[in-house]
Image (cartoon, rainbow, N blue to C red):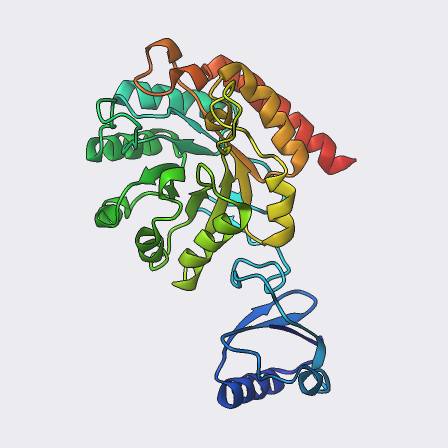
Length: 337
């Protein structure tokens, strides 16, 4: 249940009203204070609450029952967009377009630093790179692990770009203390124990949609993180598995406006993993921006043919520069028209 209070509601009235709800009905009350109104989200068994009684209170403007099982991620509870700000001032979800770019897998110091410098020059705001790599085959390159994290941090020192990289297990959380954004990959979207532990951190979490997960399942996974106290969640559409085999996955761009409607959390798109083909990245990036995405996460490699991981879907620095210019131009046009 959500309760929208009138703008003239005083602090004293708000405190008294919340105490009344907690003491009389045994529910937990979350409060979101916006520019134009204050919204209370009631979590727990609200069946015994008389909506007519609540509506009759002088400070109450509107009361609604919420059917969706996700509460904290629900826009009804939090009408205003969540904006996540990183230490360098980069904001995700404020209406601008954030570009995350870098190699699928960190391979060496020279590789990741060279790519970091090039994508920064092209306008990237965040460096992506895999240190721990979940692979379908146990014989495939699994990443440099802790060494890869150190190389990402080295690239951050050289360029100033914040870093986003994927975590695999709860026991690795301490290793990610100096990572700017922790990524939960598609295979771990429903690793609920990992999500709960990440919810106890204060780190932004980039949560990728599972291989065959519904939109509601993605939001419920975000709820696991947020229920533990961490509201800094970024949703990522990266394609789902369908009967189509021409592309690596099927990019569900309809998920972008749907998620923006259902949730207040930022939504980004990964056109690289979605298509698996570098020549499709530009057009899908443009389409994602047109659909309303808050950002893009794109794989870039200085020598895709020799990449140890996902070279077929990686752009060269020159290709990324073109994509960055085009998506920024489209974003500017959409903002001004």
